[in-house]
Length: 204
Image (tube, rainbow, N blue to C red; front, side, top):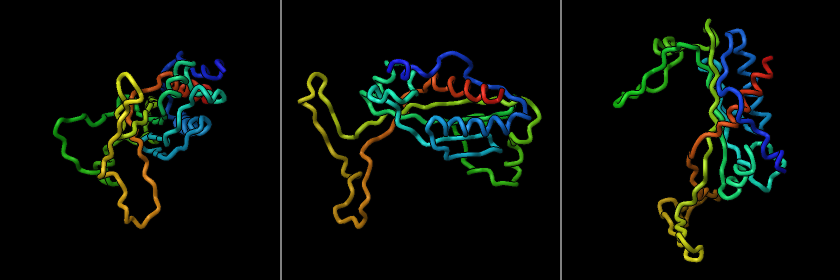
């Protein structure tokens, strides 16, 4: 059980630099690695070099067959609280001019294909210099709105209901609403390094 829970690695690089000729293989390897680790890829953008996945439930201590934790401590944390992960890959040409974040920006909407604004942005598929691949694995924790546990006794727990989120009694549909709210709490660095290591190994 302990061996399975510690299958991730905290060693190795957290970023990968590839040559332009390797971009297609590295992009495919990133999507394939996410799929092999149990994630569903929902965003695939080769021009902008972006891959994103749907969130996946993080394994707890009662799931020893899952190999996606960095030791027993992380598995215990996933058991105490409901947590999940999502993955984002970014391929960016080295030295690319990225838009700076401004305090009072004017929102112009997405760049229309073929427009001057779209042509000014880099296209990873046609760049001629080295490309950096970054991986972000976000950890999200679920919170149930309305629960107010006591600081010293669970028996004194109280709840309240937000009526704006309640489905009307005369609703015609039979849908259900998720009462949990997912909040990002950090990144899983060991998970990120493990993904980079797998992609680097597949390229060799």
